[in-house]
Image (cartoon, rainbow, N blue to C red; front, side, top):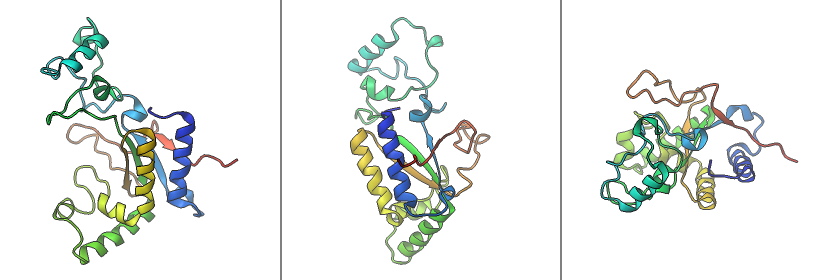
Amino acid sequence: MGTTPHQFKRMSASLFQVLCSACERPQDYDVRLQGSWAFFFSGRHKDFPTERDLAGQPVATARFQEWMGSTPPAERPARRPFDALHKLGMLDENGKPFGPSDGDFHISSDLMVAEARAKWDELKSAGKLSDEDIRKGFIHQKYSFVNRTAVREAFPDLEKWSTVWEERLGRPIAPSLFPSSGPPDKSQEGNGVSTHYRDSDWVVTNPPKH
C-alpha cells in the first residue's frame, strides 16, 4: 500500500544495496513488511474509529459520515484500514492531524546486530547515549527491536535510505532491526499482537538485475 509497483521495486533494490551491496550471503539479511501497508488493516489493538472518537472534530465527522453513511457499528470494520485516520483528517490527543500510515520494515540480521552492539558499547563508553537510550536499553523491552540510536549511528546509509523514501512517498519509513531469528513470538502476551515470523509474511527480496 502507498507505493506503485515500480516504486516498491526501486525501494527494495536500494535497501538491499545499502544492507549488502557486495555481500556473498544475502540470506543473512531477512527483510519483511509489517503493519497496515502490508496487510491493509492495522493490528487488532488499533480499533476502527467511532463517532465518539470524532467528537469536536467537524471535518473528520463529516468525512466519516460520508464514508460510513448509515452502516451500523456491527457491520463496520473492526480495525483501522491503511491511512484511515489521515484521510479522515482526524486529530490526535494533542490536536494535531494524524499523518499518513508509516511503512514498517523489519530487518533481521545477526551480523547487523553485532555491529550495532559494538557501536552501542562505543557510544556508551564515550558518554554519548542519552538517559532515555540507557533506560530503554540495547533491546527495547516491549517491542524487542535494537535501539534506534545504535542502529542509526552504526548504519548511516540506512538512515539516509529511509529519509530519501520518506520524501518520495510522503510517509514515514521505519526500519527496525532484530536478530536473525526475527521478532519473538508474543502472541500469548499482553494484547496478543506479535510480529514473529509467519508463513503469511510479506518477505522483501532483492529484485533481479536486468
